[in-house]
Image (cartoon, rainbow, N blue to C red; front, side, top):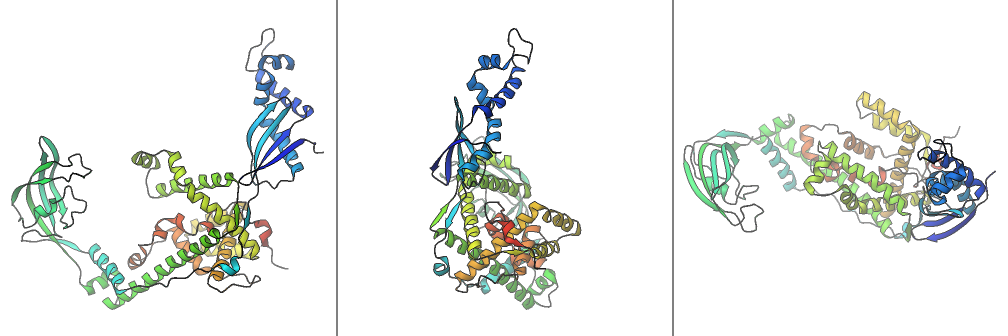
Length: 501
């Protein structure tokens, strides 16, 4: 039978409550005695063998305050669940200990409560304009130029060097007695803009030089340069050993090399189609994000305990680290290079974590308002659709993971959030779906997500139709609410319904 406790509750800001639980001596005494037995084995008490001193002697030796402090975890585990039931508080997570007292024994806890949200009349007020996708001839030309550049070959020429050429040189540079550079057989692609150059004017110094020619010249580092030689003049000595120009393939050669297209017009049309498709996906992602952000921004109330942000912050930081590992980079090296601590990076991500919590709470509230739910077969269909884009061994592992209880919760939340956002998008466009309609036609969106998440290779031409997508390059920037399960969002267990017999 549950014990009765003296419990005081005080509401505090940010959906938290301060709860003070006074613990009866009859409950606390056995816990203190057990702690005393553990403590006495680590200390020597005159007149008693190790671990054999009576409780009263141990209590006098270490003091009641210290014994209570050593017993805090055990006291909490014993009384919290029963005591919190008396308060009828809707708790959303584990509390934190704010204070305690030894006489009488009491624990003062800060308890996180369930978030609350009021989205206002979003069904009437939510309107977000959709910008149409455009692809110009100049956009296609830029892709073609990039393709030509990648397939261009360097060929030796017997003429003076020009901008755009690649020169092979021996070079020595000195500022007084200090060596700036000393290289032999150095290949330099001459740029009129000096982009990435050692010092402004260096590339231009090679223009009009010929193979076998030597030259001496002086260049001054700008006063605002980040170089250690800012404001100083360097003396260079160089000899040109080779000059090459870049030869680009013809239009027809490019069409053949890029994918055996019948002609250049077919390649151009294919690139335009890919670019339109890519920008359409980007626009759809951006629009969905804008709709969700609009609902969040216009919510009447979005209140949640700080613990939710701290939990999300840990997940966000883990993703940040994973991003570096996936790129083959060392996160610790990144910290040293940027001269930051993990805590500084963590705090820099706090706005992202706070926004994710707001979005999650918004979607959970909208899901209930819009009567969004799933059938059990929806989960199976989603698993099968995703697995179909994987290699057999990956598909088997994915299916096993998604059929686990945690995987089912994760997947259910993804689908509920996605369908809720579908509903909000329809409302924002002035086309609300009736509450009893449940969208099952999201396979196309799923296919795009699957390609992004599992890294399937694109064809040579498809590279040029998709390689400029910031959303695809940084996977964590996809619709954030579709990828971060948390049990404070939608009551998934209530949202999944077995199909009628």
